[in-house]
Length: 454
Image: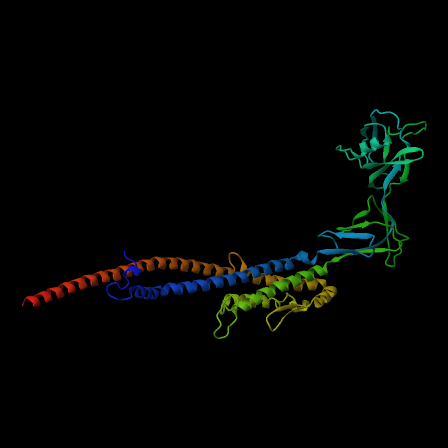
């Protein structure tokens, strides 16, 4: 079949190529409208997905703030840098004052002088300071260096908990043995390391006694004189307050107070994070649903892509209404420092919340938990993956976009077929006109011949 460029006006003198192009432009108008609608739908989907993503993030943060554990999670503090405290997630709140009278220590001792004679291996034993049977070791020789190497290189299944270091004076070499465990009566004992004329060749000379850590509970004014000692084999007193471990590192002259209170700053941080997430949703909804000036086209830059969309407006309304949602006692989030501005944003005055929390922590928790639950509900109703209203809008729009895409593809086939028919029709017209032109020429020639013969 001839192309439009080949048949254009060869006989008729008509610009058939232009004629076909114009006819095709008219025929393509419905498809062009579909493409425009598809582009608009896709930008609306993108805008709605942005809102939905922010709503899902807001919902997650609201769930955290609504959880009961948010208002029971505590933070332990100490009034002295030599005393530290750590609280578990379920630690009880409270405080305790005490004086550190003694810190725990591990046993250190020296052996007698170690013989340097001989090159044969030496077998000896050490009784671990924290109990258990004596552990037998073999050194390459009886020198202090090889004995220390045997001790420090021990890798058996039973813990040795002893390290060795060679020390030397004018009389010869000794071993300084150090326990790695603290607590009273946890002493190192050896056999076979030293020998000599003394009656107790394996006797050790203590450098540091093994001892427990001890504290005495103090009264409000710091007096600990009448208190019995609390004892720990390590420097850590487990559960001094239920769920709170206290570690001491030095004796104290004055009383130390360890307190465990609900972590108010953590709650404040969670509220700030949620308010930021709420405002992200509100700003996105406002931008994409705003009315535009005459002559301005809705776009991802100009906004207004979802103007008039009730689903998005309902989401914004629910988010703002959460601030005024009350507790069963009639208190709403404004009591905890939350408010709504004229511009449709949410603010949080942490000082107001902190004042309420200090005076009535139970009410503060109730107000914020109710507020967070309302925000969570608003977010879930919008962004739930199966039942959310914004999710449903996105899903419906995606279905519409898919149908449009299929229809556009169908139009491509129809338009291609129509162009071929037009090219064939105008090609046939040229052929027919060519035949008519030939017949006209023959008839004219015949008439001229008849006129010449008459």
